[in-house]
Image (cartoon, rainbow, N blue to C red):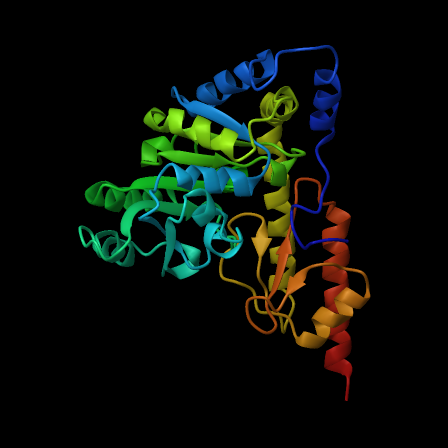
Length: 348
């Protein structure tokens, strides 16, 4: 029973069926096909605006290429210390930005602190000795499972506008954040001031398909060349596009995210009732970071449960629920924890 990541699951059956259907016959390559055109139209309708849409296969490519068109080789993007682009992209944003720099800043619950952001947004501007702030990146949902409210995104955007910076959103878990806020995609993005969105699908039911949505269409031509240069202009683009089409069809993406969030809430509610378990204050979406006794973590691992532990601090584990996490797996994990803690209390 695997709670290590929402990457450990397969793809939704609807997505796999769509790939099989799209695999039939012949069509033009490199995105000059009906599937890719339909996806662009669907995403524009979904976000209630005319945007440019580029498909890639991985979240790393989406984030790195997005930031590469927002900062120059002498520029910098401001992000949180705990952001995925800073901690988990192995330097890809700097690589694809030809040396552009990520500057991490502080903020509670893995969200950017507006005051610290404003300070760094103006720091070194015009000084030839320093990299020039040119962009900001927010992670929605964050790497610790918190979710920016719309007002918090607007506040970050206001700082960006005052400093003439572009705003990027890493939306690898965009759907989980969206259903948590119960708002529209437009409200959480361009209406709040987001210029570029990495719209994730792979963690929530796709096989390998992500979309970069450029609300600032002036970035489109450069992005097109950079995507090609990075090896993400797929010849058989229809096989990426059909995944995204199926992902969005009949609100599958929202259904999947609601299930993942509901399983996290069920897990969190159960953990909150077990003495000796310290739970993080909020369960906004589909990730939890409780603190377990070290012996408990090892006992669970020995029983076959899978999760990450001790990467953050001793005792802290990460539990992630996915679009297809069975209720029975959540309840089995809770039962195992209850048994261990009960036996520990009885021990002399």
